[in-house]
Length: 130
Image 1 (cartoon, helix red, strand yellow):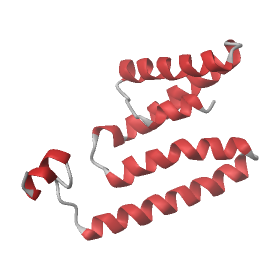
Image 2: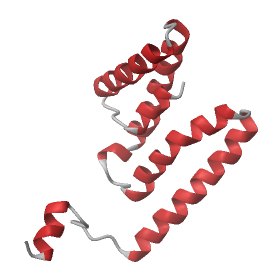
Image 3: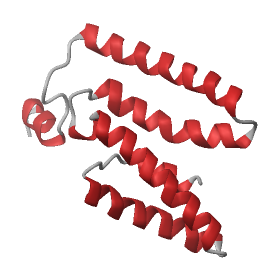
């Protein structure tokens, strides 16, 4: 299989991104996570801060790496994380078995994001960490 055909089949750089856009994405993503860490450490303490920041790393990749994608739209990011967090907390508080609560939280979050048209994959991580 020739190299161009293999690249297309694998989906490598189907849409070329400029070097400038790559740098802006990398710097923007890094700075946004740094700001989030500072804000989270100020507002929360210890392990809670680390759990919140983990799902936001994936959001930063989507927001800065694919800024025009459906999963990166403001509604998807804000509502996806918000509804998933609410569902995660509700499951953690109302289902006594942690493993069952975790599975229910992710499943329900996916269903809710579909219904609200706010699919944001890192929202699943948000539901999981509650």
